[in-house]
Amino acid sequence: MSRFVEDVSRTVSPGERVLDAGAGEAPYRLLFRGARYVGLDDGRGDPRWDYTGLNVSGDLLAMPLASASFDHVICTETLEHLSDPQGFLVEVARVLRPGGHLHLSAPLSFKEHQQPHDYFRYTRYGLALLLERAGFEAVSVEPEGGYFRYLGDKIQPAHRYLFAKDRALVWKIVFLILQPFSMLLFTVLLPALCAALDPLDSKRVHTTGFLVTARRPERV
Ligand SMILES: C[S@@+](CC[C@H](N)C(=O)[O-])C[C@H]1O[C@@H](n2cnc3c(N)ncnc32)[C@H](O)[C@@H]1O
Image (tube, rainbow, N blue to C red; front, side, top):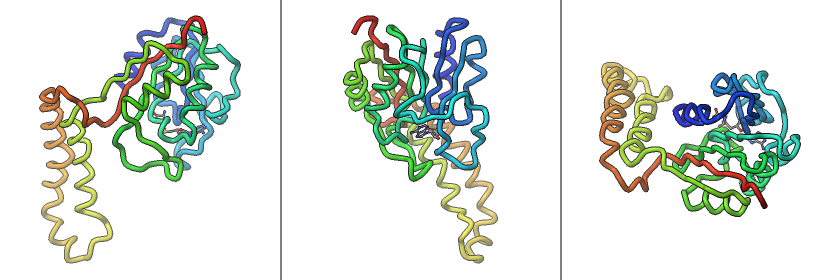
């Protein structure tokens, strides 16, 4: 994900206006220090997060922002949390200037998180449909890796489930000796092997999610 946002930041000219829609703890703010960065969120996602670095507190479905006021909108791992994704994309098109760009990531396969505000997962066709209906053009939807990367992502929690804290004492003792091997296998070795094998999958229908770029047309 951060590689995607780094690539986006290289396309942003100094002084351009960048909206981070659903910024959370604004992990990408520093990438845009040459630009005029605005982080917007309403803080509903995670009570343990530090939302104090936001510039604007507001609902993504009715953003308290002027029309045509941004050159770029970035939105990472947030679309699945919105009850009205189509309405949100129409709002993004409104706040972008004509010719401005949206850079978005959205999951196809990810565990439930930030419950209960977790509503949808997306295929590439669903994303393209929503974007076209919101009036975007030059839509590009790229998978974030293929089958092996997906597998590497899915295998990592195995260690946590095997060595869950609520196991009976006898199992805890048996597992004590196995725990370091399990951690090495599931969280280091297998994910590294999967990452190395990922280029072997050219179909990319098993993927963790998609990276999207789209443009608001110059003329509507
Ligand atoms: C999974 S986090 C992603 C945060 C950040 N973009 C990142 O990549 O680390 C989703 C964020 O969307 C915010 N959010 C969800 N629904 C929202 C809404 N309707 N209006 C404003 N923010 C919302 C949550 O508060 C949360 O911070």
